[in-house]
Image (cartoon, rainbow, N blue to C red; front, side):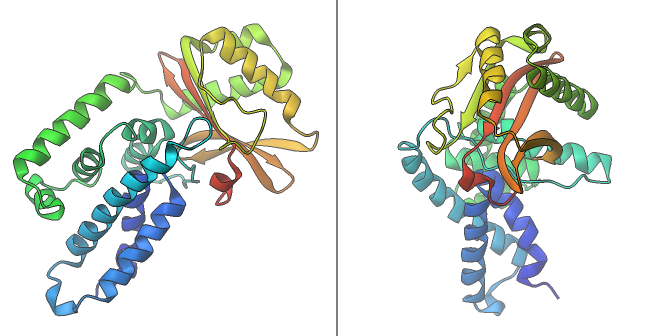
Length: 283
């Protein structure tokens, strides 16, 4: 017997990828439950298709609202990081890494809500275009066009040769070691020439950069400078966040920040730091 709980995790997976916010995703899942509960069971032919239709449409509306709010957001906006357990199945692990990494979610932010929905439903959740057309109340041709545009956009901006998990972990370790010891030259050797660093503190930490920092020298100097602002009792642990290794800085039992990297040609091409306390509450 299929119940709403059968699909709760699946619905959250869609909503989180659509919105980049675990808190908003949970709200959308709850709203989907309310609408599902209010619908006569005999009118629902496929619970999964019905629930998917509801949550995707809710998320598209939420994205429109979120974009207006983000116009007033202080500093760069980054997705809310979530801990992801390591999948035992290697194939499932690769799929998770590719579809939930912070870098991937940031690229999705550049798509229109309809394009984002079509791309995720097709590429991640493997729906046919006819199914998507019914869910989104659009033609198959419109879905195909939007999917093609979205795929082309992501292909142009994603690394051509993604790093292995081992390489990712090694580079992150070396980056952390260079920052902790204050070694400029080893740190510079890890960074791509056009590396960019984003720090999302939501205006709640005065020392956070309000604009992206670009270029090897500036990013290296900023990275070394962050040591001054960490209390003496901080500790750093590596964990899997959004399907990839990440550095989590703790102050006591509280998460202070989460740092992830994106790699190309065995160099760090981008660094994402989330330090907005509201986005770290789940961690």
